[in-house]
Length: 85
Image 1 (tube, one colour):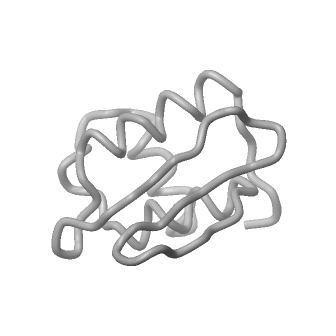
Image 2: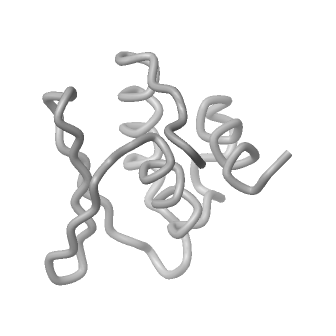
């Protein structure tokens, strides 16, 4: 199982939202086909076929738990699959 698959599995399980590394969560979104833009300390992710825009900010080296939850909800809502990761 790759690092991408492990992080995706962690996100979908929802049992350790506070322990997911920011860089790993970012890689999950990119692996799901999102385009990344950086504006100051924010990472902005969008995909043409998805209405929502996801904005992430790190808390140290970790992702913020509420943002992990938002990513999980988006993955489940749109039944997203990997794009080449």
